[in-house]
Image 1 (tube, rainbow, N blue to C red):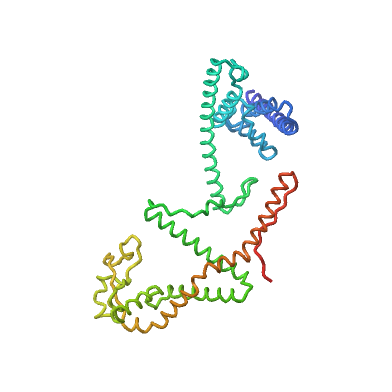
Image 2: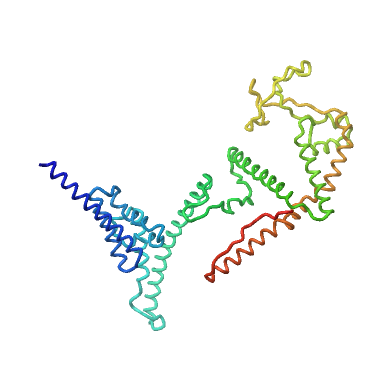
Length: 406
């Protein structure tokens, strides 16, 4: 007998749940269709969902009903979705929504509060003016407090939105909802000095990031510069020499068998003139990667040495994994090394003086003949788009494209 009653009750509940879902669908459609009696319909919709909760069909807490209804209209009517909490009592809201409701109620009260003693300022007596003045000051201070709290909330939400967008971009997501995502321009603003309070770990991370930016920028420039060569002979002649000298400088820096880059040899050439080739070669000792202690017998036995490992926290930047020492073995240069390189040293110095000062002209020339015209074309299209949008016309955007040289 009990099983029969229980089965009958379940069938009754199932029928009611089915009816409630049909009514819920119809109510949502009516709310979207017309604004008449919208508040009553939204409240009725909340009560339908509450009844489903009582029957065990709605599994979320009652305090999530407001959020659930908001999601019904999120895509079809975002404005209505954002204001659902205004139409529902607090029992259907979570704590955050209740807090916003209180703020909205406070704002409504502030709008409605007026001084009852004097309708027109021009008709107030001196005593009424003082009373009205004190009232308006108090209301203004109340509004200031409200605005201050609202600004804090705006700042907090904006910060979280930026972090969400940044995380989405890190994951390769280009769109969230209806919003297209891109890295903010401010994210690439590095015009300020690196903070002086950075410790070594922070500086090391910053160093890796900034060097990556530099190499990426150079690679992008090199690729795009080749697409837009200078159109005039004397300019391309100048740029050829600039590229040649820059390549010479960097190849000297990257050279594995040569004892130094251009600056090193210019300095040795100076000491050769003021002292002698011999003194220029051996007056200065340069560090090696050999451990001073473990390689101390290298002159007698060239095979008796031990290389240190690069370790930034060390005072010298190097650490011996055998004796844990940090001092490097040093060596000098020979008279022949200094004297025999004079011709190439002077040639490199002349190249640097004659061509490197024009490096900036190569950069500016590329911008002027190729990059800037493409950017200005896009900006012209954007200006037109904004003008049309302000007049209610359709928008049209010319996308930015790199110039193509046939």
